[in-house]
Length: 301
Image (cartoon, rainbow, N blue to C red):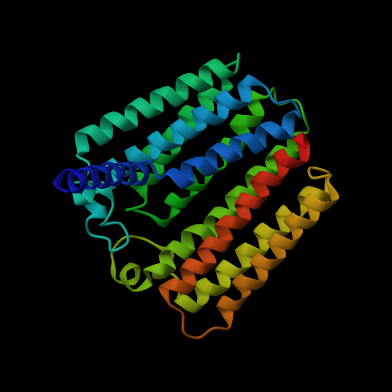
């Protein structure tokens, strides 16, 4: 009996460590960056090649490394925020030294993979630029100015460009620029919903944020306008023949209409809870996931 209990405890400990590592590297966001790379690659070619797998895997590793480095940089401030104090570093579930070493190793692996994946090495250069924008500019600047969101959004727009460059970048530039713009516009309501989840705290903190410039009601309206802009831009994908499959086009448009209608309810509901904001947040994230997945599905199936 004791042996069984010890085995169960050991499994729980290992699973806890795995969950802590996944939180350290922000695995869902890192995977989304890998999917965005696949979408950018698919815009350029309908052929599935080893370079596709290598570039997507490299961007995923690079994103994991940037996320781990971000957690290392934010570890002291994260301990003060209700939303982030349960992250591995503030809880001391992972020590700063190993976290930093893991971040550096993942970034090096990601950049090396991008260097190998594309002969001209533009992809590796874009990967290094992403690290600079996210960890060199966005992370330190977000505690000083609201404009830090600009390099943060620019970093988020790079994965599809990396995929496109890795595939040769020989299709209309307007297609990849539209996809990058869609991701850039989507990121702002994504950030604002995170603010709204912990609105009382962000209103009272000295950290620059949109709730210092706008009331919650005003931010609701601004959020809705940007979601409409994101949905409208994404609906151009079938119009300019980026999406040519009839059913995938309708799937995309239906998802975007549903998200727009759901987010519009934020203007009418008087009493909102963290759960309702989380509901909007999940739907908004699902919508960008649909946008990124229908492109390779349309090109390859």
